[in-house]
Length: 463
Ligand code: ATP
Ligand code: MN
Image 1 (tube, rainbow, N blue to C red):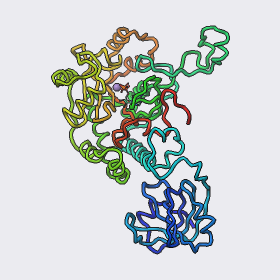
Image 2 (spheres, rainbow, N blue to C red; image 1 turned 120 degrees about the horizontal axis):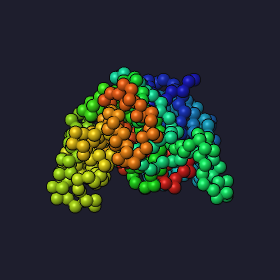
Image 3 (cartoon, helix red, strand yellow; image 1 turned 60 degrees about the vertical axis):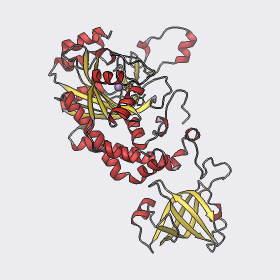
Image 4 (cartoon, rainbow, N blue to C red; image 1 turned 90 degrees about the horizontal axis):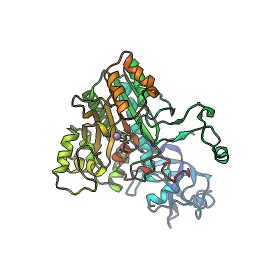
């Protein structure tokens, strides 16, 4: 027999037909009437398949009664209508085989609800729970939707390097990469001679693929990257990871307005996609995590997003009469509390803030005519805050050199980036969408550690 995924059995199974299923026991109940009920899950969908095993089965004592929570099973049986509430069908077992047994005393997952904190300590087993199975399926669907969106629009997927020699933001938060023997250097008590290092210069893990994507956009038109990104942020927040996944489209002949359109269309495409294809998982999140998951998604999949300037946003915050922890004054960065107030209380939908003061944004963002603000755009959503940061890029060679000098960056270090403005420059724009923040928003999960399989945060590298 060939195995059938439980999702297929539940969706398309025919009553009276024989199926082979393979999965893990979620729970077992033995009735006095001489039956055992096993809830089997194989990860193909949220729902379990109920297996009915009769006491008359020759393997009943040796196998069925040892099918503890967590063990892996192979079951062959006939699909029947279920008389019980809660499921339409069940599989009447003809053969039950334990593939991998479990010691029920030692197995840490039980049928009851476990706290997210506890589950983080068993990150290798938490995908066997309803929540983490659902997160994995939604993450998968969102990743597919991202590729689909860009591929359908003729964007070229480019692979930008993970090891780089530049810090795109012109600021810290870098993980250094070296082949030098740090122990030995420490013993010798000498400084570091990077000429002895593999690349002959300092290297780090990428904080963004943007600059390399710009080189490809200025040749191929519309491109995107989608890969791992690293930031050595030593802060323990519910929305920062040291390793996360970022989607970065970069578009030639595109201004800030075009950039905003692509960002809004991309988000709406993803929201509609998951509403269509992840209904069961989203209903689970709506029921057990946040009761606004579905209604929020339905709004953000349709409604136009609000676009306002940073200056207007600051006015709204100043006039709000709210007491914020961080003061509101022109030139200060927006804090998460400000982002959330604008999205959740003022507009009640995603807000796109544009034209930030140049001093709180990187040097490569295009300077506005006022010489005070840059053509930046951040997309903020309720509950999570910023999920996208982007801009139109400075395409004038002279202005870019001036901006580098003003911000203490040596133009020589960025010679190739400047070349893109020397040879056939063009207006171009792009943004970075954080995948995990997006998944937080979609699922309602409040901690970013719970939307990536193996989170990397300060002090956590067990898995
Ligand atoms: P924040 O101010 O929230 O720390 P940022 O402005 O430093 O973010 P950008 O450089 O604009 O972030 O990166 C683009 C997107 O990448 C962000 O909008 C966010 O969705 C995501 N992102 C940035 N840093 C992290 C992180 N440490 N962990 C997870 N996602 C992140
Ligand atoms: Mn940002």
